[in-house]
Image 1 (tube, rainbow, N blue to C red):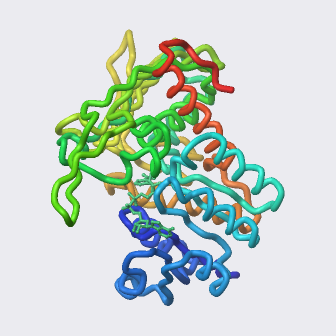
Image 2: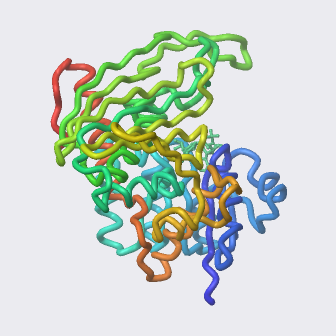
Length: 367
Ligand SMILES: NC(=O)c1ccc[n+]([C@@H]2O[C@H](COP(=O)([O-])OP(=O)(O)OC[C@H]3O[C@@H](n4cnc5c(N)ncnc54)[C@H](O)[C@@H]3O)[C@@H](O)[C@H]2O)c1
């Protein structure tokens, strides 16, 4: 079996998660990482053969089959373009870019070159959302008319909480919406099989100024991105979506909730009970399906690695998503689709439309 060579650009929180997940794929070898900060030390810590400060030098010297982009959003496009030019497949973190224009260029480049461009919308590869999608596809919900929920965190709750992730220059014109909302909206579309066509949004910046700690002491910085957003979505299959995306919701560390209502029954997934699916009935007792390969749909069983009673969570979703993407790099088709650059562009168009709606007070079509 040919071993594929992987390289990771950006070794902060999520870069480490990518390396760990890649090491669980038997035919993939992590050959290098790149980061302007502490590259050699990080490579040594992870037992990766090479650490570069410059991602271009890494690509030219290590010639990976695939590069994982785990850097700030403002750098996604330039790293992707450099990789695509060299015929290297790309797995890019979400959001795909700072706006739809950047994402469009990335899509065009992938189309010209023929390499695979994938997004790490890993929520698609948790067993329960996978099962929900199957149940919708098989008509078990009847007509799906409402999707609701959201994505809540509290890591920006304090005025002194600060990161590149809150500055539009680095994160893009929307923040909570692109950072958290993109995950949830992609999941809602994936599970329902319906696409968002029109949006309405209210954005709120709780702290228009935040305090950044610098070497010279605390500094006030004006903030031009939203701390949270509340959105209404119209889907092409007739469903309506309602959701909140917030990084200032105290006590919520990383909660994603997706509820789907149909004419026959409803479904609810909360990633804080990641292996449980609640099935809501009107005329009989509600059901609880806990992840178990012998109880779920056959296709769902293909993304479960362990027997019932053995939890599978965040690192496992990465493993399953990368398995599907690397399988595609090897020329095979996954059972259920991973997110492509086209999906990433579609999401950036939704985020841009939500931004426009929040600033105009009007419904905005997704162009
Ligand atoms: N899929 C998910 O669940 C998930 C979770 C967290 C973050 N993310 C996404 O991953 C990306 C990174 O987020 P993070 O939380 O790891 O951020 P982070 O700040 O922890 O890490 C970013 C790293 O990139 C490095 N970097 C900056 N410019 C670089 C360049 N030109 N070349 C190489 N490295 C460079 C930084 O030094 C830092 O080590 C973001 O796009 C974010 O939205 C996705």
